[in-house]
Length: 233
Image 1 (cartoon, rainbow, N blue to C red):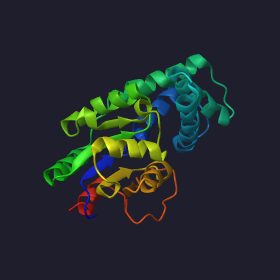
Image 2: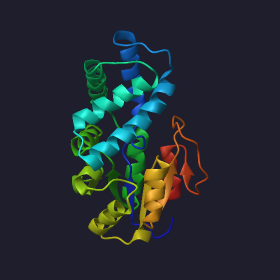
Image 3: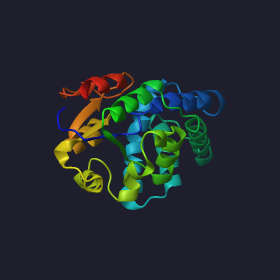
Image 4: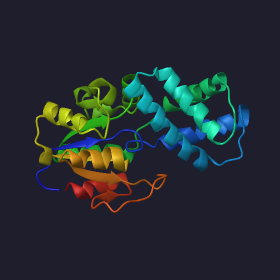
């Protein structure tokens, strides 16, 4: 990709895999709180859908963060015809926070960051989500070792969320680059790839093997984070 000066990164399911610790949450719930006759894969697919629905209520309708996090759990179990109490949903959320606090950045990501910085690229983060949660995750991953905090762009703080073109344009303006000088790497086709290309950015679709979606025929698709080096050599 020629003329690129800055490369943006999605957070969730790009710099780490949420499924890794949600699997731990699910298994702990199965053993100690409520057991359902469905696999983690089935559960997580619906949980992702319900999370998106509840997040939109949080960001668009002013729903409280605690309610958004709890309601996505209750609605997921309801989908499978299991009724759980608010207290049980709070346990799920507490387990999520516990496992999330043990996040670590994979060495492959660190190596890619180092290569890109050494090659002269500026890096930044662009993520949807509540400010406190996303900043906590970025801190646990020690992203500041590679990307300064003034280059962390979080939807709640900007009053727009991906794929809204206004979010990308705000980031573009703050960074001081033209759209064709920016690239963005993310896993969600609608939010990350469609959103950034609509803004005139170059987009790289990170299709992880654990992704529940269908792989689409995007011209710049990677299956392992190390492949980023080949794209920007």
